[in-house]
Amino acid sequence: MVDGSKVKIARELVGWTQAYLAVRADVRITTIMAYESGKIYPLKSAAVAIEAALVQAGINFSVEGQALSVPGTTDPIALQCICPMQ
Image 1 (cartoon, rainbow, N blue to C red):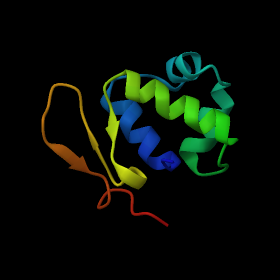
Image 2: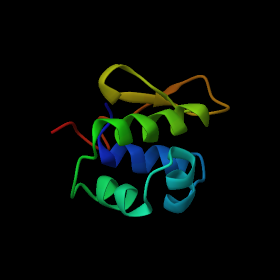
Image 3: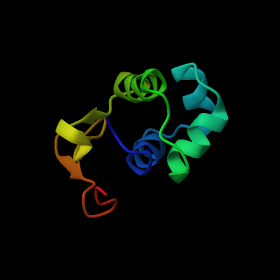
Image 4: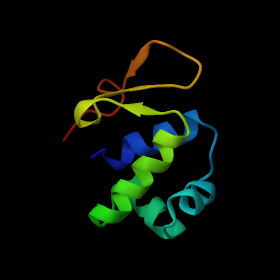
């Protein structure tokens, strides 16, 4: 699963607000806020729903969330340098 910092970057890349992602993933906005800030790691079901919503928007997370592809591009963007895995 993807960590919250990568969720934030992916959400911003597709131009979504936290509120819109919360609606698309059917989770509370406070879950998105806390997840992105690193305060919590949500329940597995919520994390899966959040990731799935972003995938539906065109984000393609690679194995272990190390990189993603952005809609309209063919080159993956390495997030490792922006948000190192902890």
